[in-house]
Image: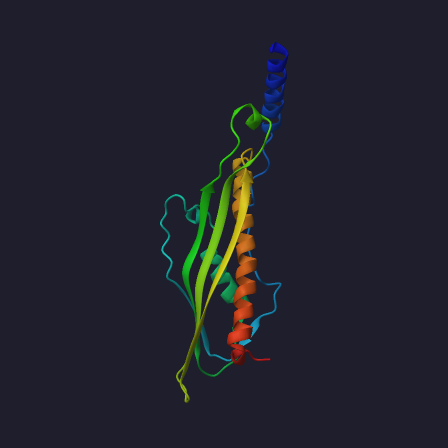
Length: 197
């Protein structure tokens, strides 16, 4: 029994020693862009982004704790991926949901839990948006599509604060890619006549 206790204490000491050197903090100027993607040229005169999402500013929401948010990603997407080449008409990208929620996961308890490193947190990012086109005509026209994008990342219980910050960035980065994929596909499929080829 004493031998077993010595092994457990030795492992704990090794773990504590390994944790004294924390990984570097994420760069302060970290950003998510779409500049590598070809712009979508739309036959409209104006593009607007309207943010209707109101953050709760409390747990389990965590997006308000970071400078890069799902809403800021949508604004960047519109600025970098959309361009106007038409004499009239308006496209409005309306953000109705742009959140990252922190979910607590169950981890193994007891002695077995000492020897495992399970995920204890899941970050879930979600964007709901509506893409509207209005043309006063003639002939007058009004069309819209709604899209949803979701992404998630699990975080190990051993993760440092810096690693948890990087996990947040990763989930927003994954969410940005999914938002780009879903909305681009929807525009090409449902509103293809708006695109200047």
